[in-house]
Length: 425
Image (cartoon, rainbow, N blue to C red):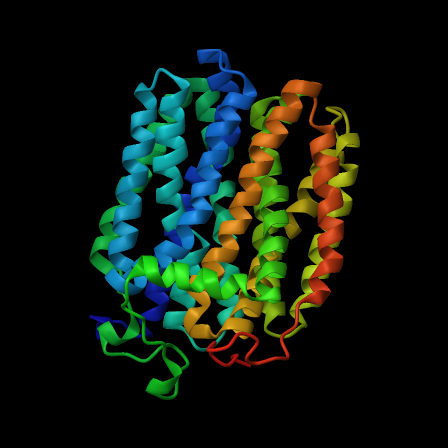
Protein backbone atom coordinates (compact mmCIF):
# COMPACT_ATOMS: atom_id res chain seq x y z
CA UNK A 1 0.00 0.00 0.00
CA UNK A 2 2.84 2.41 0.87
CA UNK A 3 4.29 2.14 -2.68
CA UNK A 4 1.31 4.02 -4.08
CA UNK A 5 2.68 7.14 -2.44
CA UNK A 6 5.60 9.18 -3.85
CA UNK A 7 7.01 9.56 -0.32
CA UNK A 8 7.75 7.34 2.66
CA UNK A 9 4.61 5.97 4.31
CA UNK A 10 6.01 7.05 7.69
CA UNK A 11 4.75 10.55 6.90
CA UNK A 12 1.19 9.25 6.47
CA UNK A 13 1.50 7.54 9.84
CA UNK A 14 2.83 10.75 11.39
CA UNK A 15 -0.12 12.78 10.07
CA UNK A 16 -2.70 10.25 11.32
CA UNK A 17 -1.02 10.12 14.72
CA UNK A 18 -0.86 13.93 14.87
CA UNK A 19 -4.59 14.33 14.25
CA UNK A 20 -5.43 11.52 16.67
CA UNK A 21 -3.45 13.30 19.37
CA UNK A 22 -5.12 16.61 18.47
CA UNK A 23 -8.61 15.19 18.97
CA UNK A 24 -7.65 13.29 22.12
CA UNK A 25 -6.15 16.52 23.50
CA UNK A 26 -9.38 18.34 22.70
CA UNK A 27 -11.35 15.76 24.68
CA UNK A 28 -8.91 15.91 27.58
CA UNK A 29 -8.97 19.71 27.73
CA UNK A 30 -12.79 19.95 27.88
CA UNK A 31 -13.14 19.77 31.71
CA UNK A 32 -11.71 23.28 31.91
CA UNK A 33 -14.83 24.67 30.23
CA UNK A 34 -17.28 22.17 31.79
CA UNK A 35 -16.61 22.82 35.48
CA UNK A 36 -18.72 25.98 35.76
CA UNK A 37 -21.70 24.67 33.63
CA UNK A 38 -21.82 21.42 35.63
CA UNK A 39 -21.58 23.38 38.87
CA UNK A 40 -24.56 25.53 37.83
CA UNK A 41 -26.75 22.71 36.44
CA UNK A 42 -26.25 20.02 39.08
CA UNK A 43 -25.24 22.06 42.12
CA UNK A 44 -22.05 20.02 42.62
CA UNK A 45 -19.25 21.90 44.39
CA UNK A 46 -15.97 22.47 42.63
CA UNK A 47 -13.98 19.96 44.66
CA UNK A 48 -16.47 17.18 43.76
CA UNK A 49 -16.19 17.95 40.03
CA UNK A 50 -12.42 18.29 40.37
CA UNK A 51 -12.29 14.76 41.81
CA UNK A 52 -13.72 13.33 38.57
CA UNK A 53 -11.20 15.37 36.59
CA UNK A 54 -8.37 14.11 38.81
CA UNK A 55 -9.45 10.48 38.20
CA UNK A 56 -9.40 11.23 34.47
CA UNK A 57 -5.90 12.70 34.65
CA UNK A 58 -4.62 9.89 36.85
CA UNK A 59 -5.84 7.11 34.55
CA UNK A 60 -4.68 9.11 31.53
CA UNK A 61 -1.16 8.65 32.87
CA UNK A 62 -1.33 5.21 34.48
CA UNK A 63 -2.68 3.53 31.35
CA UNK A 64 0.31 4.76 29.32
CA UNK A 65 2.88 2.03 30.05
CA UNK A 66 0.25 -0.71 29.70
CA UNK A 67 -0.87 0.89 26.43
CA UNK A 68 2.74 0.71 25.21
CA UNK A 69 2.80 -3.01 26.05
CA UNK A 70 -0.56 -3.52 24.34
CA UNK A 71 0.74 -1.72 21.24
CA UNK A 72 3.70 -4.09 21.16
CA UNK A 73 1.45 -7.13 21.54
CA UNK A 74 -1.64 -6.28 19.50
CA UNK A 75 -0.45 -3.45 17.27
CA UNK A 76 -0.73 0.34 17.35
CA UNK A 77 -3.73 0.36 15.02
CA UNK A 78 -5.95 -1.87 17.16
CA UNK A 79 -5.19 0.09 20.32
CA UNK A 80 -5.97 3.39 18.56
CA UNK A 81 -9.30 2.02 17.34
CA UNK A 82 -10.19 0.79 20.83
CA UNK A 83 -9.19 4.12 22.38
CA UNK A 84 -11.31 6.16 19.97
CA UNK A 85 -14.31 3.88 20.52
CA UNK A 86 -13.95 4.25 24.29
CA UNK A 87 -13.77 8.04 24.01
CA UNK A 88 -16.88 8.22 21.85
CA UNK A 89 -18.84 6.01 24.25
CA UNK A 90 -17.68 7.79 27.39
CA UNK A 91 -18.37 11.35 26.33
CA UNK A 92 -21.76 10.55 24.76
CA UNK A 93 -22.96 8.85 27.94
CA UNK A 94 -22.07 11.95 29.99
CA UNK A 95 -24.94 13.78 28.29
CA UNK A 96 -27.47 11.60 30.17
CA UNK A 97 -25.72 11.47 33.56
CA UNK A 98 -27.56 12.68 36.64
CA UNK A 99 -25.22 12.07 39.60
CA UNK A 100 -21.62 12.90 40.46
CA UNK A 101 -20.54 9.24 40.61
CA UNK A 102 -21.64 8.87 37.00
CA UNK A 103 -19.32 11.75 36.08
CA UNK A 104 -16.49 9.89 37.82
CA UNK A 105 -17.22 6.64 35.96
CA UNK A 106 -17.81 8.17 32.52
CA UNK A 107 -15.48 11.15 32.32
CA UNK A 108 -13.04 9.98 34.96
CA UNK A 109 -12.63 6.30 34.09
CA UNK A 110 -13.80 5.73 30.51
CA UNK A 111 -12.49 8.97 29.01
CA UNK A 112 -9.38 8.69 31.20
CA UNK A 113 -8.56 5.24 29.79
CA UNK A 114 -9.36 6.26 26.22
CA UNK A 115 -7.36 9.47 26.22
CA UNK A 116 -4.43 7.73 27.95
CA UNK A 117 -4.15 5.25 25.09
CA UNK A 118 -4.06 8.11 22.55
CA UNK A 119 -1.49 10.30 24.27
CA UNK A 120 2.25 10.94 24.50
CA UNK A 121 3.13 7.23 24.70
CA UNK A 122 1.46 6.74 21.32
CA UNK A 123 3.59 9.54 19.89
CA UNK A 124 6.81 8.17 21.38
CA UNK A 125 6.03 4.67 20.09
CA UNK A 126 5.24 5.86 16.55
CA UNK A 127 8.28 8.13 16.27
CA UNK A 128 10.73 5.51 17.55
CA UNK A 129 9.20 2.76 15.42
CA UNK A 130 8.81 4.64 12.13
CA UNK A 131 11.71 7.11 12.15
CA UNK A 132 15.47 7.06 12.60
CA UNK A 133 16.07 10.63 11.44
CA UNK A 134 14.69 13.77 13.13
CA UNK A 135 13.25 11.97 16.16
CA UNK A 136 13.55 14.95 18.50
CA UNK A 137 11.89 17.35 16.07
CA UNK A 138 9.08 14.91 15.23
CA UNK A 139 8.45 14.15 18.89
CA UNK A 140 8.19 17.89 19.41
CA UNK A 141 5.63 18.15 16.61
CA UNK A 142 3.51 15.30 18.00
CA UNK A 143 3.76 16.71 21.51
CA UNK A 144 2.67 20.07 20.17
CA UNK A 145 -0.53 18.44 18.91
CA UNK A 146 -1.80 18.86 22.47
CA UNK A 147 -1.45 22.60 21.99
CA UNK A 148 -3.08 22.40 18.57
CA UNK A 149 -6.03 20.59 20.16
CA UNK A 150 -6.49 23.49 22.55
CA UNK A 151 -6.20 26.03 19.73
CA UNK A 152 -8.86 24.29 17.67
CA UNK A 153 -11.27 23.09 20.34
CA UNK A 154 -11.34 25.34 23.39
CA UNK A 155 -12.58 28.70 22.00
CA UNK A 156 -15.08 26.96 19.74
CA UNK A 157 -16.37 24.64 22.46
CA UNK A 158 -16.53 27.46 25.00
CA UNK A 159 -18.64 29.54 22.60
CA UNK A 160 -20.84 26.55 21.77
CA UNK A 161 -21.28 25.77 25.47
CA UNK A 162 -22.28 29.36 26.21
CA UNK A 163 -24.69 29.57 23.27
CA UNK A 164 -26.13 26.04 23.04
CA UNK A 165 -25.24 24.31 26.31
CA UNK A 166 -22.45 21.91 27.26
CA UNK A 167 -24.21 18.85 25.85
CA UNK A 168 -24.06 20.21 22.30
CA UNK A 169 -20.33 20.79 22.75
CA UNK A 170 -19.95 17.14 23.77
CA UNK A 171 -21.98 15.98 20.76
CA UNK A 172 -19.70 17.97 18.45
CA UNK A 173 -16.58 16.32 19.85
CA UNK A 174 -18.19 12.89 19.43
CA UNK A 175 -18.87 13.66 15.75
CA UNK A 176 -15.23 14.64 15.19
CA UNK A 177 -14.06 11.41 16.84
CA UNK A 178 -16.49 9.50 14.62
CA UNK A 179 -14.92 11.05 11.50
CA UNK A 180 -11.38 10.19 12.65
CA UNK A 181 -12.15 6.55 13.48
CA UNK A 182 -12.56 5.25 9.86
CA UNK A 183 -9.37 7.09 8.82
CA UNK A 184 -7.43 5.13 11.43
CA UNK A 185 -9.13 1.88 10.37
CA UNK A 186 -8.28 2.38 6.69
CA UNK A 187 -4.82 3.94 6.72
CA UNK A 188 -3.00 3.22 9.99
CA UNK A 189 -0.15 0.65 9.99
CA UNK A 190 1.59 -0.94 12.96
CA UNK A 191 5.20 -0.81 11.73
CA UNK A 192 7.34 -0.15 8.63
CA UNK A 193 7.88 -3.92 8.27
CA UNK A 194 4.14 -4.37 7.74
CA UNK A 195 4.48 -2.16 4.66
CA UNK A 196 7.71 -3.75 3.48
CA UNK A 197 9.74 -0.69 4.46
CA UNK A 198 12.60 0.33 6.70
CA UNK A 199 12.02 3.19 9.16
CA UNK A 200 12.48 6.59 7.60
CA UNK A 201 16.18 7.43 7.58
CA UNK A 202 17.28 3.84 8.31
CA UNK A 203 20.19 2.46 6.31
CA UNK A 204 19.73 -1.18 7.31
CA UNK A 205 17.30 -3.44 9.16
CA UNK A 206 19.48 -3.10 12.26
CA UNK A 207 18.36 0.53 12.56
CA UNK A 208 14.73 -0.53 13.06
CA UNK A 209 13.06 -1.61 16.29
CA UNK A 210 11.46 -5.01 16.51
CA UNK A 211 8.40 -4.67 18.77
CA UNK A 212 8.37 -7.01 21.74
CA UNK A 213 5.34 -9.29 21.70
CA UNK A 214 5.26 -10.55 25.26
CA UNK A 215 2.57 -10.20 27.89
CA UNK A 216 1.71 -6.45 28.03
CA UNK A 217 1.06 -6.50 31.78
CA UNK A 218 4.32 -8.33 32.51
CA UNK A 219 6.25 -5.98 30.21
CA UNK A 220 4.82 -2.90 31.91
CA UNK A 221 5.49 -4.18 35.45
CA UNK A 222 8.99 -5.31 34.47
CA UNK A 223 9.72 -1.85 33.07
CA UNK A 224 8.46 -0.27 36.30
CA UNK A 225 10.69 -2.54 38.40
CA UNK A 226 13.65 -1.54 36.24
CA UNK A 227 12.78 2.11 36.70
CA UNK A 228 12.29 1.93 40.46
CA UNK A 229 15.88 0.69 40.84
CA UNK A 230 17.21 3.70 38.94
CA UNK A 231 17.99 7.10 40.45
CA UNK A 232 17.62 8.63 36.98
CA UNK A 233 14.10 7.26 36.64
CA UNK A 234 13.05 8.82 39.94
CA UNK A 235 14.50 12.16 38.87
CA UNK A 236 12.76 12.10 35.49
CA UNK A 237 9.49 10.83 36.98
CA UNK A 238 9.64 13.41 39.76
CA UNK A 239 10.25 16.23 37.30
CA UNK A 240 7.30 15.06 35.21
CA UNK A 241 5.13 14.86 38.35
CA UNK A 242 5.76 18.58 38.78
CA UNK A 243 5.26 19.16 35.06
CA UNK A 244 1.81 17.54 35.16
CA UNK A 245 0.85 19.33 38.36
CA UNK A 246 1.75 22.74 36.94
CA UNK A 247 0.15 22.26 33.50
CA UNK A 248 -2.75 19.83 32.96
CA UNK A 249 -3.71 19.59 36.61
CA UNK A 250 -3.54 23.24 37.65
CA UNK A 251 -3.60 25.67 34.74
CA UNK A 252 -5.32 23.41 32.21
CA UNK A 253 -8.12 22.51 34.64
CA UNK A 254 -8.50 25.59 36.82
CA UNK A 255 -7.44 28.67 34.83
CA UNK A 256 -10.91 29.15 33.31
CA UNK A 257 -12.79 28.90 36.65
CA UNK A 258 -10.08 31.07 38.28
CA UNK A 259 -10.74 33.71 35.64
CA UNK A 260 -14.46 33.39 36.32
CA UNK A 261 -13.77 34.11 40.00
CA UNK A 262 -12.25 37.44 38.93
CA UNK A 263 -15.11 38.41 36.59
CA UNK A 264 -13.43 37.32 33.37
CA UNK A 265 -15.93 35.61 30.98
CA UNK A 266 -15.42 31.92 30.15
CA UNK A 267 -15.05 32.52 26.42
CA UNK A 268 -12.25 35.01 27.02
CA UNK A 269 -10.61 32.64 29.52
CA UNK A 270 -10.81 29.75 27.05
CA UNK A 271 -9.23 32.09 24.53
CA UNK A 272 -6.30 32.47 26.93
CA UNK A 273 -5.82 28.69 26.94
CA UNK A 274 -6.00 28.72 23.15
CA UNK A 275 -3.39 31.49 23.08
CA UNK A 276 -1.21 29.28 25.26
CA UNK A 277 -1.80 26.53 22.73
CA UNK A 278 -0.57 28.68 19.84
CA UNK A 279 2.66 29.55 21.60
CA UNK A 280 3.04 26.03 22.97
CA UNK A 281 2.97 24.80 19.37
CA UNK A 282 5.92 27.08 18.67
CA UNK A 283 7.73 26.32 21.92
CA UNK A 284 7.36 22.55 21.78
CA UNK A 285 8.38 22.17 18.14
CA UNK A 286 11.34 24.44 18.87
CA UNK A 287 12.15 22.33 21.93
CA UNK A 288 12.12 19.19 19.77
CA UNK A 289 14.59 20.82 17.37
CA UNK A 290 16.78 21.94 20.27
CA UNK A 291 16.69 18.52 21.97
CA UNK A 292 18.64 17.09 19.01
CA UNK A 293 21.32 19.78 19.43
CA UNK A 294 21.49 21.14 23.01
CA UNK A 295 22.17 19.47 26.36
CA UNK A 296 18.73 18.24 27.44
CA UNK A 297 19.37 18.99 31.10
CA UNK A 298 20.08 22.65 30.29
CA UNK A 299 16.78 22.78 28.39
CA UNK A 300 14.80 21.31 31.30
CA UNK A 301 16.50 23.65 33.80
CA UNK A 302 15.41 26.61 31.68
CA UNK A 303 11.86 25.40 31.12
CA UNK A 304 11.07 24.55 34.74
CA UNK A 305 12.76 27.66 36.10
CA UNK A 306 10.84 30.06 33.85
CA UNK A 307 7.59 28.19 34.49
CA UNK A 308 8.04 28.47 38.24
CA UNK A 309 8.64 32.22 38.10
CA UNK A 310 5.55 32.77 35.94
CA UNK A 311 3.32 30.80 38.34
CA UNK A 312 4.62 32.69 41.36
CA UNK A 313 3.60 35.93 39.63
CA UNK A 314 0.25 34.66 38.31
CA UNK A 315 -1.94 35.68 41.31
CA UNK A 316 -1.15 39.33 40.52
CA UNK A 317 -2.22 38.95 36.87
CA UNK A 318 -5.99 38.49 37.36
CA UNK A 319 -7.17 41.95 36.38
CA UNK A 320 -9.88 42.20 33.69
CA UNK A 321 -8.59 45.63 32.69
CA UNK A 322 -4.92 44.67 32.22
CA UNK A 323 -2.99 42.61 29.67
CA UNK A 324 -1.06 40.64 32.29
CA UNK A 325 -3.01 37.41 31.72
CA UNK A 326 -2.38 37.62 27.98
CA UNK A 327 1.34 38.06 28.64
CA UNK A 328 1.21 35.10 31.02
CA UNK A 329 -0.55 33.01 28.35
CA UNK A 330 2.16 33.80 25.78
CA UNK A 331 5.04 33.18 28.19
CA UNK A 332 3.51 30.07 29.78
CA UNK A 333 2.42 28.70 26.44
CA UNK A 334 5.98 28.67 25.10
CA UNK A 335 6.90 26.52 28.09
CA UNK A 336 3.74 24.41 28.47
CA UNK A 337 4.99 20.98 27.35
CA UNK A 338 8.35 21.95 25.89
CA UNK A 339 9.67 19.59 28.59
CA UNK A 340 8.53 16.49 26.67
CA UNK A 341 11.12 16.20 23.83
CA UNK A 342 14.19 16.50 26.12
CA UNK A 343 12.60 14.12 28.64
CA UNK A 344 11.94 11.54 25.89
CA UNK A 345 15.52 11.97 24.68
CA UNK A 346 16.93 11.42 28.19
CA UNK A 347 14.66 8.38 28.70
CA UNK A 348 15.86 6.81 25.44
CA UNK A 349 19.48 7.57 26.29
CA UNK A 350 19.24 6.03 29.76
CA UNK A 351 17.08 2.96 29.11
CA UNK A 352 17.55 2.26 25.39
CA UNK A 353 15.42 3.17 22.39
CA UNK A 354 13.71 -0.23 22.23
CA UNK A 355 12.24 0.37 25.70
CA UNK A 356 11.46 4.06 25.37
CA UNK A 357 7.69 3.49 24.97
CA UNK A 358 7.41 1.48 28.19
CA UNK A 359 9.81 3.56 30.29
CA UNK A 360 8.49 6.90 29.08
CA UNK A 361 5.00 5.51 29.69
CA UNK A 362 5.83 5.24 33.41
CA UNK A 363 7.39 8.70 33.41
CA UNK A 364 4.14 10.02 31.90
CA UNK A 365 2.22 8.12 34.58
CA UNK A 366 3.96 10.25 37.20
CA UNK A 367 3.14 13.31 35.10
CA UNK A 368 -0.54 12.48 35.36
CA UNK A 369 -0.35 11.56 39.04
CA UNK A 370 0.95 15.09 39.55
CA UNK A 371 -1.84 16.43 37.34
CA UNK A 372 -4.46 14.51 39.33
CA UNK A 373 -3.08 15.73 42.67
CA UNK A 374 -3.08 19.33 41.44
CA UNK A 375 -6.53 19.10 39.84
CA UNK A 376 -8.12 17.91 43.09
CA UNK A 377 -5.83 19.88 45.40
CA UNK A 378 -6.41 23.20 43.65
CA UNK A 379 -10.17 22.58 43.68
CA UNK A 380 -9.99 21.84 47.41
CA UNK A 381 -7.91 24.97 48.08
CA UNK A 382 -10.44 27.04 46.12
CA UNK A 383 -13.33 25.53 48.14
CA UNK A 384 -11.60 26.20 51.48
CA UNK A 385 -9.85 29.52 50.78
CA UNK A 386 -12.18 30.99 48.17
CA UNK A 387 -9.29 31.58 45.73
CA UNK A 388 -6.47 29.77 43.89
CA UNK A 389 -3.51 31.90 44.99
CA UNK A 390 -1.89 29.30 47.23
CA UNK A 391 -2.23 26.61 44.56
CA UNK A 392 -0.40 28.73 41.99
CA UNK A 393 2.38 29.66 44.41
CA UNK A 394 2.96 26.07 45.59
CA UNK A 395 3.22 24.88 41.98
CA UNK A 396 5.63 27.71 41.16
CA UNK A 397 7.93 26.82 44.05
CA UNK A 398 7.96 23.14 42.99
CA UNK A 399 8.95 24.11 39.44
CA UNK A 400 11.90 26.19 40.67
CA UNK A 401 13.10 23.28 42.84
CA UNK A 402 12.75 20.86 39.89
CA UNK A 403 14.82 23.12 37.63
CA UNK A 404 17.76 22.58 39.99
CA UNK A 405 17.16 18.89 40.72
CA UNK A 406 17.30 17.96 37.02
CA UNK A 407 21.10 18.39 37.03
CA UNK A 408 21.37 15.26 39.18
CA UNK A 409 20.33 13.12 36.16
CA UNK A 410 23.32 11.16 34.84
CA UNK A 411 23.62 9.75 31.32
CA UNK A 412 27.25 8.65 31.50
CA UNK A 413 26.86 5.14 32.96
CA UNK A 414 25.72 2.78 30.24
CA UNK A 415 24.65 -0.05 32.51
CA UNK A 416 23.31 1.58 35.63
CA UNK A 417 20.94 -1.36 36.18
CA UNK A 418 22.15 -4.94 35.85
CA UNK A 419 20.71 -6.52 32.74
CA UNK A 420 19.59 -3.25 31.22
CA UNK A 421 20.40 -2.52 27.58
CA UNK A 422 23.22 -0.20 26.70
CA UNK A 423 22.27 3.37 26.18
CA UNK A 424 21.73 4.74 22.75
CA UNK A 425 24.07 7.67 22.18
